[in-house]
Image (cartoon, rainbow over all chains, first blue to last red; front, side, top):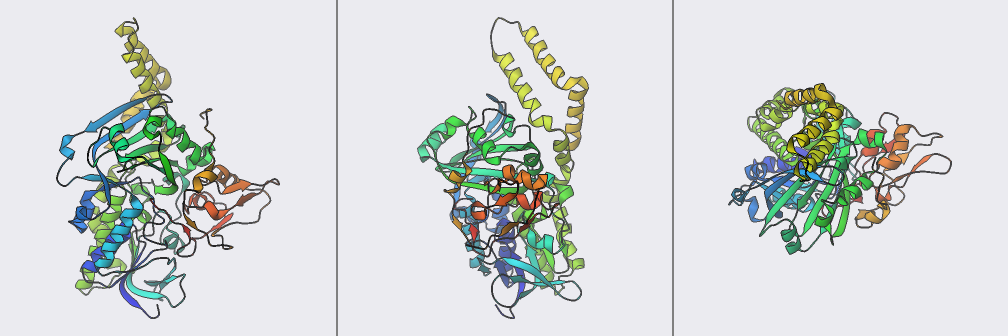
Length: 434
Length: 99
């Protein structure tokens, strides 16, 4: 790799990096993509739900050969206490459409597929290559990268950093600050295999229909976090994640938390008889809008998790990654085609375009939510308990009159949170949601 | 904290994972110390793969073989500077089958 020069170098072959590399290669740029894993996806973990929209924008016919598991027709939101859950389910025949909106995927398989499409578009992908440094010229402008392979640095007009949540390269180069333990979650996950017809019958599914379950409540032991179960073709993805700062403070181990979740009476029957084939762990950026770092500079851009592009409320990340990757790629290609330099001033166009998309609009909408969750952790403990207790009181028919039951329920809420506490919670929740 | 904790053997879970271990070149090193900070000590529970243990004389040690490079320890100990954290060399470390 001596004296090589590319239009663009992309660091990382996840959804963000691959979206950027694909867009630029399609626009006729020479692109080198570097991935430290043995293959794309080797280091990546996701639930995983794939949203069709950002993939379709890049590869309209992706449904023909992308490794999709099931299209999602039902979403379940559960609030758990130790023995019960209160849930909201939405299931619709309308989701059995010609071009479904959401799919479950197995992330490593998807990343491999995406990378193949990127290579077919003309980018050069080099795996097993860890980028160690950015190369700058005398003015400080980024002009290339050094890797742990033998040889000279590789040069490019621009470096797109899609290095993921654990973005050592950008942090060490001073492009962004170190992540804080309270703005990042640690999630652990297991892959449980079952025959396809067992998954179908346990979740009332046919064909490639799928269900996703998001769960919050006492399963996170008072920590800020959520759990999930997603149906794949012949496996279930089950995981749970909480803020790193909460794991540190509580002394709970992530593995034990996952084990408790798996053993919850509402979950255990779903997993019965399954074979676990992988145990994974990964960080998720959860700091929201206020944690988004500088996104561009002289000769560089940041995309995906490295740019803290995750909507924690809606459990969206890979779609933000692909959208930021695509827009970074389009911006670079447009500047190149106009004969403009990839300077900080010109790359400001990237941020301008992002601001006009759902990515920045949604992050902005929930900008106060991370700190709200942090300071109101009873949302994850007290309320799930109260709701489950209230439901038990309400649905049990035991000779107690309904007025007394109503009073009992209202009293339980008042005792736990007081009237001002309840009103305050409702008011604060409304404000951060707005 | 829930008292009915099921016993979890993390090391048994790790047998299901695929790793390419870079023998003799650990990508994470705990710096020599006499007393670990509470951050470093917290890693004996917070590390999802159970890589950190406290030895008999009170120091925290790491065995990186089961590490999935999540970065939790890097972030928790950034403030204290007690560990050196790098990516494994290209191709080494965890290689997820499913992710």
